Image (cartoon, rainbow, N blue to C red):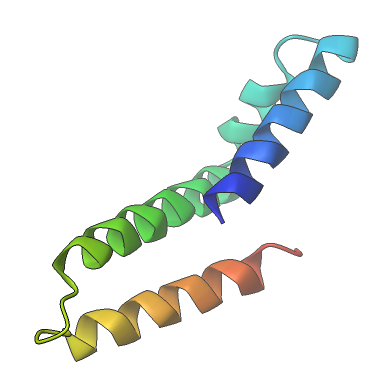
Length: 80
C-alpha cells in the first residue's frame, strides 16, 4: 500500500511539473485528502510495528484484527 501511495504522489508531482509546481500542495491542502493520507500513514506505521512484535509463540489477536480492519478500510477508500 505504501508503494501505491508513493507512486500516486510521485505521479501527481511529475504531472504537476507540466502545469504548476504547487499542485501537490493543492492536493494535500484539502482536509479530506490530508485525512486520508494521514490514515494511510497511520495504517502503514501500525502494520510495521505489529510486524515487529509478531512471534510464533505470541500473536496479538486484537492488534492483528485491527491491522486487517485498517488495511481493508484503506483499500476501500482508495477508489473514491
